[in-house]
Image 1: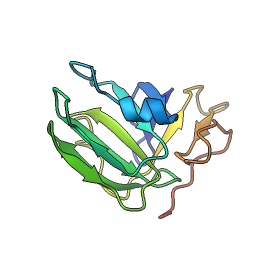
Image 2: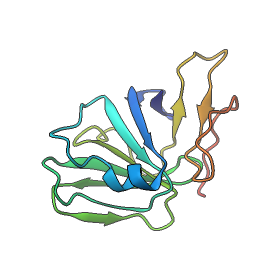
Image 3: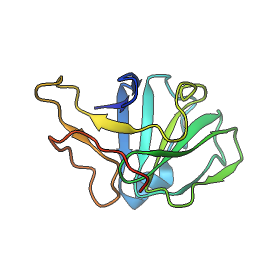
Length: 139
């Protein structure tokens, strides 16, 4: 699974982990020495994160249910960030979000290609892959 930027079609992260349980969201990236530039951790549902006890900075994307980027923050260790109204958070290696901007749409894709691609929004209700194309909105 990968995260794709809808505006450019660029892959934001090619190795995606999803933290959809309370325990996996609570652990997040804790205990890791670094995060690969091609990796991402999606926390859903989530609207706030911290980097307490972490050893490296991260880029944090706060996204709506539809995948619209609402806020982008680079967090060094021992900081907190909140994205009011966000449905999910995407954590990336620091600098990995440099080509993204607020208002961009990102979505999860299995990468099957255009004819049979399976894509999904970041809905906190469901992270299931669907066959429909992503449709970003302000929600």
